[in-house]
Length: 89
Image: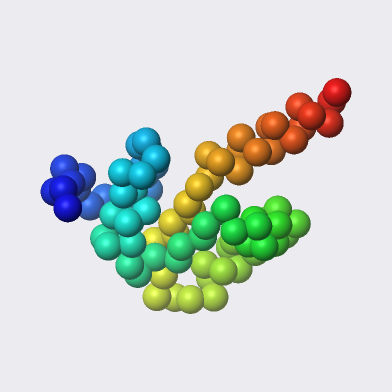
């Protein structure tokens, strides 16, 4: 295991990096009190797409939530762009 040079954040932030370097693992280890939403899980993604306010409802439902971690945002954006392009043809 490598020692990470990342420091814990107090405000919102984006965590970027190549695949397989442990971004999600680091978040689980350091922000375990967070609500974790993985957008690669199709059921979750579809629910949030159909009802965007569900995100707010999920956060407000648990007063103990200190962080909201939304994983795989970039992949869903790319998928949506690809689908839109394919529909145009």
